[in-house]
Length: 269
Ligand code: ARG
Image (cartoon, rainbow, N blue to C red; front, side, top):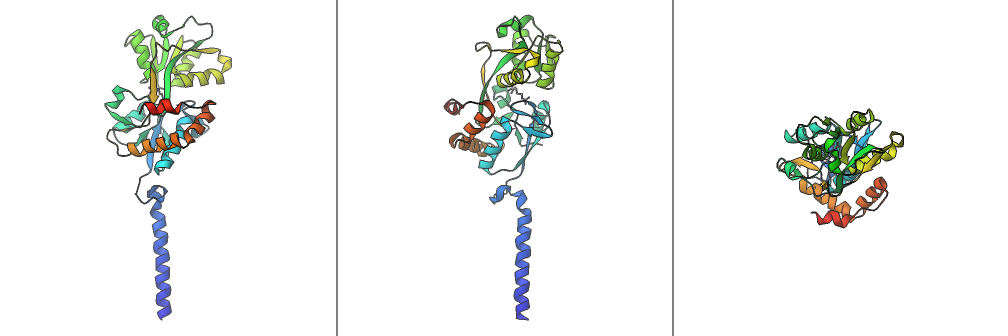
């Protein structure tokens, strides 16, 4: 009889232990703080930062976020929702993080929070080889395709004037490039690494990339969050950890074939 009691207690504790394991998926990495699984939204049409490889979202941003989130002890899922919905989801609180080569700027800081910067970028011009475009100012009498709602679109609006019909705005950057391919535009303005990757991967298109350091500002990407999100510091700390421990440099080298300027990035914090 006594033995049965012990056996029962033993079984009960095993059942309880298993039940506890069952709920651990809600506690990311079992650190006991009850961190929720993050919904990370992106526009996966922006190689090499985020793009579709068959049905998988891959890219530099994905690797950097994965490493930073791991340091910070968060589980997450990345969902390809498109550019405008990234902002809408953060605004109405259905997503926790926007991961989309998003430039940190004053306008966005009014409505969103950002992590520390993780990448330096600038706009450049993609145009057919043999173009007479040499600098940003040469775009004034051209037809220019851009992704709507980006800093590239802002830069072109500033040059050609708001609501100028020669600025053609698209839902994603690939559609803007396609428009030029179909001769519907003389140039595309977007982030340098994206245009350089496209030109390199599509030599048959005969596009060239034009730089104008005076015409376009230097920009920095951050992870974007709803205003007053409580996870900003955790993810910034995760980012700093991978900037310090060599993981960021490893990822950067994998995607860009060179070493990052980590000091320059850190100087922006
Ligand atoms: N860096 C630019 C911006 O923030 C363009 C980003 C576009 N990103 C994307 N995944 N389509 O406006």
